[in-house]
Image (tube, rainbow, N blue to C red; front, side, top):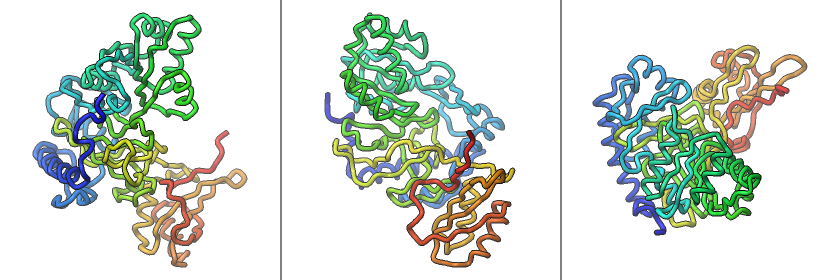
Length: 400
């Protein structure tokens, strides 16, 4: 196969940013012209950095707007070929045009070509995962067996009968099919590639697939946004897709973190059929410095590193990342804060680790009571000593 899916993957940084800025300006103009519910107040876009001045869109807001203005909340959505439902419920549009979900780029990077027959074990109902991967397979010319989920024995027999060469689905279900095939004495050795998503690909599982002669790569995608990032054969982080702008922000805010720091993944899609501006995924990740050894020049992220929604109930009160961010915003002398929820005997205890050079503990504890609605002990830490792991509420209580 060709080294790259298209020339977009090897653009210079300057060329990519110029293209993104032009597309983003058109996207916001289009969204503002149609969307009555969404708040798109923000500065004039002179550079991509200005995007940080726009509000973050959260799923809770999207769900609320969709209830008020069904099915898509008043957003500038092109008439869809399909409508999907995700938990919430949240409704997403889908189209059948060429590589609409941008999954073809990932499948190409995973080595899937027009010579392959792909067993697509993602669900084809309610959520779009099955059609997302089918649309991507069509983009690279592969043949698809639309297997969906379940019926493992039939899956294994079909893989052997058809001569399946590639798998698409969650990381662990391929092992279930392979083990069933071995139990039934079926030859599944033609399967040499796997493109997975929707769950954790543990190193031990990837190693087992490799021992079975299967190269397994993963992507990071959502029903709302399509493909966000994907692995290449270099397997050094995930390369951001060419159709989205990814920011990593402090959880509970829209403020970008430094390169390498862990934060919430916020995505702006450049798809004119469904323009989502600064959509918060609720996932944690971090930008990796440099570019991939495979030659693709876009930024990389470390992949999925947990959930940003760290809301905890302490002493009967919910404490949310937004409250911690409000505390930090009130105190310019504070660089970072981390709430620790622990248990002493049968009682909850809250400690707030604060990264600062200041010593005004009493003032900070007053702010904690006002903003978090709880009493908490403030512990001072030197600048640069709290972990850069994206955690702002660390619940250390045992629930076993």
